[in-house]
Amino acid sequence: MNDAPTFHLAARMAHIAPFEVMEIQKLARKLEAEGRDIIHLEIGEPDFRTPQPVVDAAKRALDEQPMRYTSAMGLQALRKAIAQFYADRYGVEISYRRIAVTAGSSAALLLAFGVVLDAGDEVLLADPSYPCNRHFMRTLGGVPKLIPVGTDTQYQLTADLVSRNWGERTRMAMVASPSNPTGTLVAPEEVARMTAAVREKSGTLLMDEIYHGLTYGVDARTALECGDDIFVINSFSKYFHMTGWRLGWLVVPEAYERQVETLAQNLYISPSAPAQHAALACFLRETIAILEQRRAELAQRRDYLIPALESLGFRIPVVPQGAFYLYADCSALTGDSFAFARDVLERAGVAITPGKDFGNNAPERHIRIAYTQPIARLKEAVARIAAITTRNP
Image (cartoon, rainbow, N blue to C red):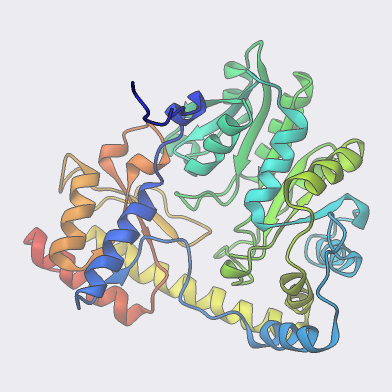
């Protein structure tokens, strides 16, 4: 008689791959525990601390506020502050009632997919793109349809690509601007054309704007300029440097407000109360001043790292205008980006992310490198990589 417990794995798990950047980070932490000095250029998390006004606001709130469940849509004061942020920064007026504060932008994605997608519905995505997006879709029964994109479109979807790839089961197109992993933006006129193309198909457009604020030489414009029927996600993690606080938001078309609230109530009850009270300080003048200084520093890091990597044999055909990533063609150095990333970590002590995380579009030829360390550490990273690739920086 076999008394072994039955093990059943949901079929969806066959489509959900490990997040390779976390595997790289796990190995990096192991090497650090053994005494190695590792330069972390793999994770989308800059070295900056959460701005002090935000930390101070959290401390005050812990002393003065009852830390109970908030509304599933978030603190009304924070929702109003976000609405005012859109008015001040973008000149776009939206009702705070359309803003759902979420448990990270990941929860915002789950809400948007959850209220729109039925089992088998397709979502158009650029390839390469952030891997968790397609895994969220799979978890909810959706089907990601990856569209290979290249330098001719700045690694972005276009209205023409959306129209040509829209099928009978397509329900949504998702676009990230700036993008992870490429750091590229979609021009405002192209966003308008994509919005029109999706409307023509009676579909839904979801815009990922979580790297807004982190752009260089240009200020990003929100897709909300194009109408009230677009889902827009944003985050307190990137521009506001609150990664560990796990807080984001979703701007919801008015027709979906109640459904999004209902789903949020059931998925996670409410966002973190301490994080929400802290985030109220993100929009203070003194906080914005700190963030803008950091944006200037990130621009300097990007401008150092691009020619430094190119001198080693990497190719960066599209200069990123946003985020804090370089999506580099490493084919002159290796035919296997994952093996190369492991080799660079183990031999040079530099953690970088292989292209296989981001889709099926020549992942073996690409590496994502995050300029999330000071320039002195970036210079050290370049020197270490040069030492194992026999090139001089």
